[in-house]
Amino acid sequence: MKIHRLPALSDNYVFLLHDPRHQIAAVVDPAEATPVLTQLQALSAQLVAIFNTHHHGDHVGGNARLLHHFPEAIVHGGAVDRGRIPGQQVFLQEGDQIQFGDRHAQVFFVPGHTRAHIAYYFPPHREAETGELFCGDTIFAGGCGRLFEGTPHQMVDSLTKLRNLPDQTRVWCAHEYTLKNLQFALSVDPDNPQLHQRYQRVTQMRQRSESTVPSLLGEEKQTNPFLRWDQPTLQHRVKSMDPIQTFARLRGMKDQF
Ligand code: ZN
Ligand code: FE
Image 1 (cartoon, rainbow, N blue to C red):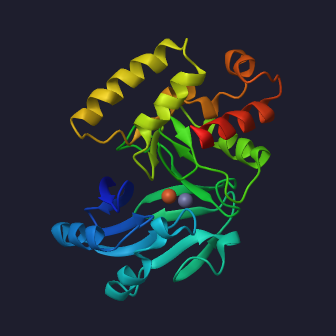
Image 2: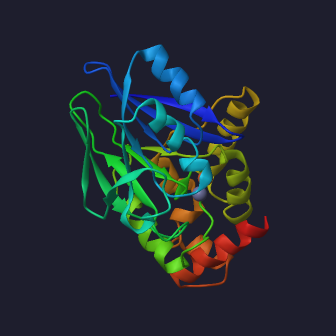
């Protein structure tokens, strides 16, 4: 399975999964159809599945037009999103498995950004040592999604599920927000040496207009304040000893940043 990262809209990423042996493709969160159709044509691949993480327009905006070109493609999304995702045919819950070619992914129910958000995790495989996590707007590189429909408690539960995955998991998040996220991270976690290193690296990458996605989950665990609600330094920073309250205060500060 080869993963193509397609920039879309102003700062979205759409991920095209390609199985060259069977000449099939699937797409994660098609913000718009055009870049997907162009890439499918270049690969001579047939679109067989759309995997949506949640119902927001910048994640499902391309569904209808892709279905027009590939009527056989099956649209997957969260069960709780029923009625909100164009063309949805498969309604997924925590623990479900989906298939693409000869790869399988596990579904995680990760409410918080929306009440229906799901994530797709492809575990490591003989031809690839890294797991692949498609987490939409749940984890961002250096940050996390805003809480539009969920509570801090729900989001911490959701992020805990994803944080438990192996360090070498690649995190394919849906937006290029990394530099801004790390600026915030430094403001609340200024004594974290790994965070400083990451910030310098990302600054240089962005100066060269390089993408910072995917990131590695191991580095997120060390540098992303929204996966570090149980770190004493961050708890001290926001004057709380409660993990959920620590997360909630960090999220509130980021909303104002
Ligand atoms: Zn969203
Ligand atoms: Fe989004």
